[in-house]
Image 1: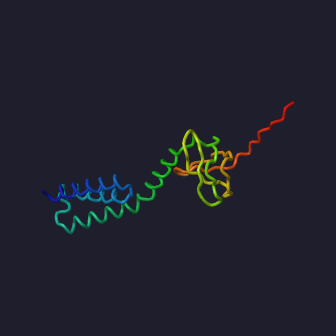
Image 2: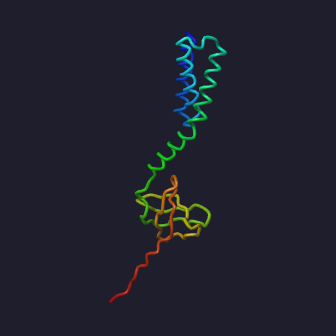
Length: 152
């Protein structure tokens, strides 16, 4: 195996590690290894010390320049995919939601973890409105709907 082939294999291994870890570090190691493989294949980095220098410089430059923007892009993209269809829907508290803790609501035929938006306790049996989703937790507020039994 030639040096450029070893760097290419190393780059592919780093890329595979990135797909498994999604840490946004292995991707830059992969870029460094693949650029080193290319430059070694072209004969620009023939000795091991030149290859290691190339790998280090390319990895550090791409890591410093690209990690934060890539992470921001990825986070903004995943936030757009959050559950927004539930916002405004009503649910019933089945396990009291403590002021600074988690309770349970019954919504669409299943139980969900819920926390209070206002950090006030919401007792079991009360109706709540889903304000937003925080991962798998529903952030809720006590429902203010009053049902009138007035007979005219």
